[in-house]
Amino acid sequence: MTFLTFLVAIGMAVAMATMLARLFAGPTLYDRVLAANSFGTKTVLFLLVFSALVGRQDAIDIALLYALINFVATIAILKFFRYRSLEIALAQMSLRKALDGEYEK
Amino acid sequence: MFYGISLTAILVALWLTLSGPFTLSGNYPIVMGLGVISIIVTVALTYRMRIVDRETVPVGPAVPLFAYWGWLGGEIVKANLAVLRLIMKPEIEVEPRLVRVSAEHRSELGLCVFANSITLTPGTVTVDVEGDGFLVHALDNSFTDPAGFAEMGARSDTASDGKKTGAG
Amino acid sequence: MSAAEIFQHARDAFSIGAMAVGLVFVIAGAIGVMRLPDFYTRMHAAGVTDTLGAELIIVGLMAQAGDWQTAAKLALVGLLLFLTSPTATHAIANAAHRAGQKPDLSHFKPKHPADAGSSEGQK
Image (cartoon, rainbow over all chains, first blue to last red; front, side, top):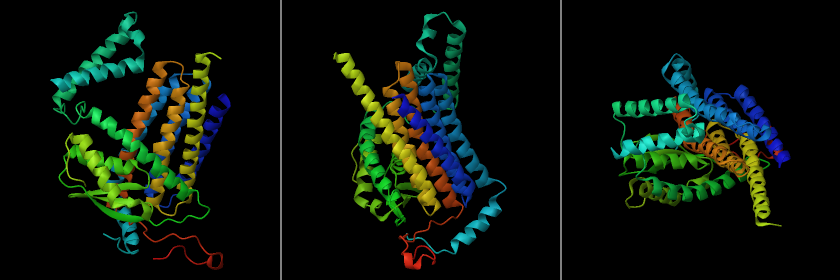
């Protein structure tokens, strides 16, 4: 039982590392935001498993807060990049992508 | 008034869940006082924002929503297994599609529940809401079954509005 | 063996099963995010982690929780993830779509070893 919980914690850490790799490798901004969001979800799960592993209930409260902050941070990053200074860079990127052809309706 | 009382009851339950029922014993007057103050301030603020209605306190459609979540859970499991099979193939073979799903004659809550259900089911993500339809990105050709979308739309409509409408 | 022991063993077995399957789904979602070819397809792989993987691990932890308050808090975290993850996914997808990023709709086929050097996919 404890061994499986430990294994799940290790698995969460591995998944978090994978998400970090995508975060650094991601070709577009949205890959990075997606990786950051998914990293947050895995961190929440890691905290829950960690709290079961060491028998501390406090970590569940931290996980709850982290889930909330993760959601708000994702929305805030997206809003910043939609309405603020990177608009021009995004437009140039979209122009390059638009050459790939029209999607089907 | 009904929604205000429901909101207060939900907040009290949330407070008791998070801080523990020992606050009710009266030995920790500061903890209990802070809870009472924050609940009163929250309810007063929501009344001041005039958002206490059927959509923000969905106690009316709660029972049909939970029944709908049961059905949605089965769909999520099925779609998860399908996506898992696609991902774990030794060579990735997917055919992404962008399709339009019609969602006409719906309330805003119905639209929200429908779009959330599509996004929640792995393999399909609502990309945009355009007039009376959704733009849905599907991971593979096999996820773009119009009958499946129509059934999900009809069920979500029944769950959110409590009335039967035509399919899709 | 008393009824309480049987219940205890059934609870442990359920918890182990749920957490093991949840771990498989989370790892599969992480692998999918690394392997899939395009932003919009990676989004679906992240959805696998957010829905079934997370919920199964939380259900497994709830089954081995000691008291009701821990279980209630875990259920609260699960409900929060269940409600916010589709919203966040939709926000990211919608932001990418509004910024003009077009999804790659070509058919990603496994490459034949003979033409491994050529570009991937074809219209």
